[in-house]
Amino acid sequence: MTGAFAQLRTPTRRNAELLMLLFSVMIVIAAEAAVEAAHDGHLSAHLATYAAVPITIGVITHLVIRRVAPYADPLLLPIAVLLNGLGLVMIHRLDLGEQQQAKDAGTTFGAQAPTQVLWTVIGVGLFIALIVFIRDHRALQRYAYTLALIGLVFLLLPALLPARFSEVNGARIWIRLAGFSIQPGEFAKILLTIFGAAYLVAKRDVLSLAGRRIGFATKKRFVGFDLPRGRDFGPVLAAWLICIAVLVRGHDLGTSLLFFGLFIVLLYVTTERVSWVIIGVLLFAAGAYLSYQLFGTVQTRVAIWLHLFDTSSPATDPTHCLSPAYVHCSSGYQMRQSLFGLGTGGIFGTGLGGGHPELVPLPATDFIMSSFGEETGLFGVVGLLVLYALFVARGLAAALAVRDSFGKLFATGLSFLMALQLFVVVAGVTRLLPETGLTTPFLSYGGSSLLANWVLLALLLRVSDAARRPATTPPPPPVAAAEPVGVTA
Image (cartoon, rainbow, N blue to C red):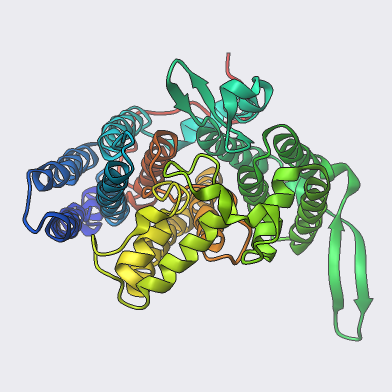
């Protein structure tokens, strides 16, 4: 009787999710209609195509969640569908602009939006498979070390392959074979998040022990912080060395920053010791300085960041950008065009289809936020940032509400991955930090990033379902004990 009463008192909020999905689809359809009207002066058949994508994925994923994860957070899926749909609209809009450029220059053109639609379908399929077959997020804890090994292979494999199979724009983060390319680091960050959460839950008491104290004592209290014991430095040093290895071979500053920042945050959440954060910042500063001294790619990006409008510098020389395909274009030109586009957009933007974001080299990947900034203005960019903030906030809310320690750390890590990646991307586009080459979650063109984001969403929904499910409700099929953490037979 008590269990049935608790179930009745805890709403599943699936109807609220459906209502928000309808609202998200309407926004995507309106955005596509604005692009079509601005470009052709009338609505075309493309509107039906790009409206059918968010409608289909919204209906299918909603029905699956209603069936297998009824207590999942009702806002995460609508936000993801809206971001994915708006990304498709912007990529299609950029295709229209680049098609006109190619026509004027007499060159060939390959549309990216149809490929992104295909990746969206695959991502949704992967999302459904994960949320159906993983009925309890705690099952992942049993395979922590196995998943960590797979993640390290994914992270380091592109750096170990010959450059012709892995290098794009100076960064060796891809696997390219027979016309197919994938960025395995996008999946490695999720696998390593699982390992980090499982490892820190098992070692929490050891890592919380204090070593030497640094500071001074007053009459009332000690002012300073406690350093961890020397024997406990192993996890941080291992993470730091892996990041340095990725930098040395892959020249991938973005992934290194993302991975190391994730591990430091998980350490702080686990131990609540500021000393781990201080040590992490110092190690990152040392690694950044070392990479600057060793690698020309990092030096070029820092030079562009500091001296963007100094055309006497080879790194910012605009004469390399005369080709319509931007094959030999320097990143300095790319950044300048991005800032000009943001300035042109102003507060309200030029309107979808009314600007020229295609003038920025590769605008659908690293600089898609500047494309939105030009055509939707400051208001549009702030609206997108609010959507991401809500996504992260709902993920952290699930982390606070879930009952097991592994779920708390796991959801915190996934949410922080989204937040840190977005911060690095926006900071790079606006010249707050050097550009790192990371993609904007759900918005940017690229199969690897989109698939990884749908995987992240499925795992967050699974944790939130466990967090909101009444304690008296019978859980999904039983899972074997999660201790000790390691590889199962």
